[in-house]
Length: 409
Image (cartoon, rainbow, N blue to C red; front, side):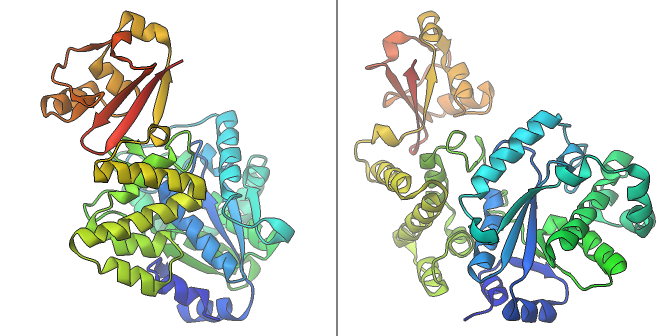
């Protein structure tokens, strides 16, 4: 049986790792408890999180035990990594709601039966910490001079860095220590932007417990065009079907840049690497077959086979010029009163998320990029009323492939 470390390395996940040879040997010889942290900054996980989820699934399938750590405590502060200003502070109730949503989503991907995986929330131990006791046990092991050399803090010194945010690294380090003590957790994994935070916990355990633990990070994915994977002009690609319908997830992946196909197939699916390389090597129009496989496989894992098939059918209709399957198109229900009085096309496009601003909507209409019921919209001052609806429905299209239906409540 192959070592999961080799699998992760071959598929392109691994960025940095401590004591690579030792960790590889450990993962090949025994079941290792490891953890991944998810700060509850929104009410859904994103496609960007799916990399960590895939790693958890690969590791669990190889016999290791994942701990999904919900950041109900750390989210009260917010990770300063990669930020130019302080994160928006969320109230306790919102964070708890978000964490519960994460738990619900994560439970679909990892097997929680018979203690094969654990989901815990660091609010259980961070919210009631005694400050002086915490600083005496943990704070004394952190050098401020050294912390200021880390990018997550160094890059913020000119704009201003609060002591509030400065404490984040100590709390994440304490998480690793807590999970080591309670569950014999020997490894923390996360995105490459978490390297300094993960090392902090790794070093704290070695100092306090005199034991060897490990750290491993994964590359933050960006597209060949330089944008963060899962980010679009219209916003984030969410795993919650209410926020990003299965069809939109499918279409996002179906429209993957040719240069990214092999990488995304490797990281976001369980297809054997031989098949990944075969699909990734296709050229010209043939590469679209690989994109369909990518979109179908990911949508099936996230939303189930039935939704993946529906999305695939609708997508093929768009690309092949067939009649669109309306049941598979994303839609927004709006009150009838809105259209009795009428709403401007610019406002409507922005309201349903097809554009991010009225200025973007205006530009697209002037460029011929918006259609209403399959007719080009040419008038930026057009007001949409009940007369524009057919059987209580109105179809908007952005470009050639992005459809959105308006339905009356």
